[in-house]
Amino acid sequence: MTTTTALPFSVATILRGNPSNRPVRDDTTAALLHDHLVAAVRRTTVGLPVVVRAATLRGPLPTLQSSTIGRFRGLLVTTALRLLVNGIHLDDLFVDPLEAWRSTCSDGALLQQLEDLDADQSARLAAEVRAHVNVLRTHVGPVPSAWRPRTGVRSTLLLDGGALQLRDDVDLQIGTQRSDVASIALLDVTTAPLSPASEQLLRYHALVHTLKTNVVPLRTALFSTATGELWTRDVDRTLLEAAVADLTDHVTSLAVAA
Amino acid sequence: MSTLHITDTSVASLAPLLAPSLPGVSLDNDQVTGFAAQLKAIATTSTRRIDAWSVERGGLPSQPFAWSASTARRLLGTAAAQAALSGTTVLSAVQDQIADHLIRATRGETRFGSLGHWLGLLSHAELGMVSAEAVNWATQLLDVADLLGPSVTLCRTDAYFNVSGAQTTLRGRRDFRVGGDDARVVVRVRSGAPTNVAGAGLRTDLFIETLSHPARQAPQRFIGLWPDAGITLSVEGTVENLRKGARDVVRVAGAQRLHMVAKAA
Image (cartoon, rainbow over all chains, first blue to last red):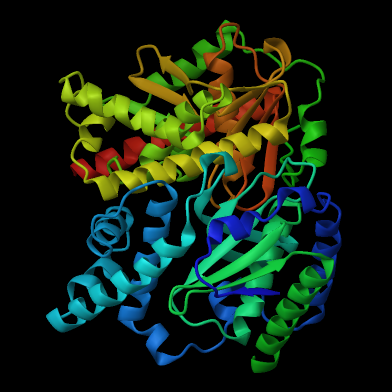
């Protein structure tokens, strides 16, 4: 794993890396992983279907992260990323992401929660979002359109006839599937500090992408706007097998709990 | 045969679905007239619009249409993908599309409720989200085009068929066409994951695609591609699938009629 904290660095540049040293595109591993995963899940006695999200793999979250303000902070920071990657200048690091997020949110209950924040909570949210987006803006760097960036990429995998559902959201994906070498890089942005559980998250993103597209991505990364720390992992079969083991353990733990 | 074929979205899995085979069947005038007669028999007081989505919902009324970043993305993104195929970057193609709509709105060339009119009401941050969604859609189309190979054509329009005298417009969504006109394969790209009624939606799209063809010729296959789920479903252009598609359209018209009567009562 590579951890980057030194200043200055560009997340986009690190994600892309050196195009001349990329491994050959791997489109054979996905089928093996799929079979291993399905076989492992079938061995458990958990009630089906099992739905796995990136958040469920992290386990219980600290109170701060699961608070209303923490949730909105995360949503607004990822919205800011979408705007920055699409070349939108942010006049105000809080107001612009807020306006943009509101315009796309269809969850009335969530919008109401935002309206229900008192003046003190709103001020705290604004201050936190401005600080986190500032870190994001400093480090993301320009993402040329030629890299085919996509933001807010969702996945909904139905494995074994829907018995196992893997859901995931990746904040930024760059690269193309059809290159002769591995070229897809995945980035997740978190407003929490990175922790050992973040390793699982990195692996999960890589596994879901591989199963979805049948092509192993080049690398997977996690950027913390709390610390300005970037973790990147080049994706290989070992990493993907570890991700399958994580998932199997998770499903087994569900079975034991049941 | 009305088998629904399920596979992944890899090039290897898609290739057999795109390979030339026997041309699809055609609908004759009697079949089209018979279908139109069934729709005419289901009275309506206003124009009826039926598509795969309404079939998948069993004719249940949907929320009234409203522009949003999600509803605008296909229109803007498809046009941008078309431009990007000629060498422009996706982002600048999307920005050009948005600018064109805004200019037309500023000149007063758009009507109230049009995309241009709606875009003109947005702040720059909101326009940024519209742009982000359209870039995602356009990029996804380009990725799918890569999967489908060199003989793919991006469809500029959906398939429409107006049923004479029945106040009914049928809309079949389509994103790509592969192969020649007489043995074409039509591909539709969809978000999310397919549900258990996705097959009915595909057969509806197949039927409307066939009706809109000048010679009423069915494509040899209609493919639904769900990149978010890595799943491909396809139906062949057989008489049985066309019949099922037609039956579902008539069934939806009947369900819409019942909802209309219930609402009025």
